[in-house]
Image (cartoon, rainbow, N blue to C red; front, side, top):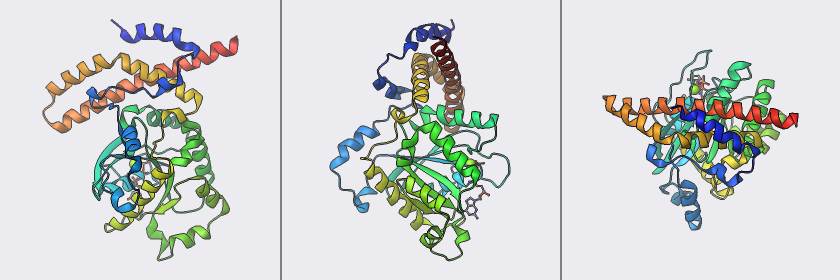
Length: 329
Ligand SMILES: Nc1nc2c(ncn2[C@@H]2O[C@H](COP(=O)(O)OP(=O)(O)OP(=O)(O)O)[C@@H](O)[C@H]2O)c(=O)[nH]1
Ligand SMILES: [Mg+2]
């Protein structure tokens, strides 16, 4: 029986937008292991009394979710690897896109659990751009209930027109509140040739400095080619912790998404929720066939990627249909 079809009919009744906005934050059950209803946000609220000086901060046991965004080849995967101090993500010098899918890897920095979500490069290049934005927006299971901080990764330099278009694209995807959760990471810090990072920024174009103003977390320089940059990672983590504090220890949630995206996500989450039992059953069948732990992880991730992709496409279609109906009335 095609459950998705039955779901579609039921969802059509729900197209009138009367659902409570609060439902948007409903996420998948933790029993799957791939869409955990992470309690971090609540845990962080409980920790509100904890002093935020950096020495205690690095021993807080909750996982910080950090999402990397930026143009193709800007150094996102390398930055993720530098932070985690191991080669979690594939990084390479090539003109085609190296990272194709969002991926998550975890580590421990100075006693602080950290999860990094790597993403494919966001470049304005027609139809691929749509695929990439869909890939980033659909990966609910990887960063639910939301990243604490976005690292916008860019090679050190003034803003190009492509950068400016990419910022518009990011804002259209996540809404303008994203900048409250953003730190700019300038890669290729080796190009500084001994100059102080602050001096380089002070002499940069006004457009770049205005953009830095917009991002609440400021900026940080990284040299991903330096194997001895532990100190720089700790400094970045302090900036991340400070930004988390400024944001009241909250994370970026789906309620900040632009209205259309919120609707799509809500539908997508409902579709996935309805298929949860089947997905869990498929997971069980997959596990039996796998020989290693890694294979289990990979297969589960592939399964969820496919399910999320299907749900996203269906949710997008419904939204377009809904908008069409609205404009014709
Ligand atoms: N010299 C230098 N090279 C860097 C630095 N950061 C990244 N690179 C190089 O830049 C190239 C691209 O880096 P990636 O980390 O793969 O870039 P990406 O943003 O993940 O690329 P996509 O996944 O294709 O979007 C690689 O050859 C890296 O070694 C840096 O700080 N200094
Ligand atoms: Mg990459």
